[in-house]
Amino acid sequence: MEKKQFKAESQRLMDLMINSIYTHKEIFLREIISNASDAIDKLAYRALTDEKVGLNREDFKIVVVPDKEARTLTVADNGIGMTQEEMENNLGTIAKSGSLQFKKETENADDAELDIIGQFGVGFYSAFMVADKVTVISKAYGGEAAWKWESEGVDGYTIEPCQKDTVGTDVIMSIKANTEEENYDEYLAPYSLSNLIKKYSDYIRYPIRMEMEHSRQKPKPEDAGEDYKPEYEQVKEWETIN
Ligand code: ADP
Ligand code: MG
Image (tube, helix red, strand yellow):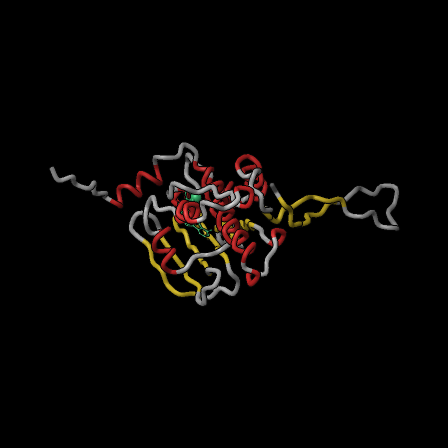
C-alpha cells in the first residue's frame, strides 16, 4: 500500500511552537544564546584549518544589549553567520536545524573542539514568547552581502539585503508590552538578564558580555567638612556574566 506523508499546517505548528512547548518564557534567552554559541563554535572550528578566518578562541564573544527606550533586546555573536539561503532554510523551516546538519557533516571531528548544542530546530522560535517582532541581521563568513530576516510570528517572514560590516549575527527582539500576567520589562533590565544568563547559560564556553550598572561611592572631596555625607553615582561597566 502506498504510504502517505504527513502534511503540516505550518501556521498552527508555529503557534504551538511558540505557545505550548515551553513552560517558562524566560528560557528564550538560553535558546538564543545557545544558537550564538553554536555559530561561534562553527567558525572557531573552521579557524583551526582555515587561517584566513584570522580569529582565535579568545576573540569570540556573545554580546547582550538591552535597550529600554527602544524596547529591544539584542544578542549579537561573531560566529559563522548565515547566508540568505541559510536564513531561508534554518529560520524559515520549522524543525530544521542547520546545527544538526553541521554536526553530521563533521562527524569525525574531535569532540573537544566542537560543542554544538542545537539539534531540534525549534529553539529559535521561543523568542516569540517574549517578542512581538524578531529581526535577524547576519553576514556569513565568506559571504559578500548581509541579510535581514524579520518576522512577527505566525504570519510569515521577510528577507532583504542589508548593511553589516562584520561577520556574525545580531538577533534583535522587540520585547512585548507588559500585561497583567507577565512583566516583560525584566527582559530589558540588565540585572534580571544577568540572573537568567547565570541560571541557564553559565556553561557556555564563550564569554557572554553585558554592560552592567553599579552604584559607586564618589571620592570624598579634599575640602569635605565634618558633616560630609558620602555621595553615590551610577557607573556602567562591561562584564562577562558567565
Ligand atoms: P537548533 O539550534 O536546535 O538547530 P534553532 O531553532 O534554535 O534550532 O535554530 C535553527 C537554526 O538556525 C540553527 O540550527 C542554525 O543553523 C540557525 N541559527 C540560529 N541562530 C543562529 C546564529 N546566531 N548564527 C548562525 N546561525 C543561526
Ligand atoms: Mg537552538
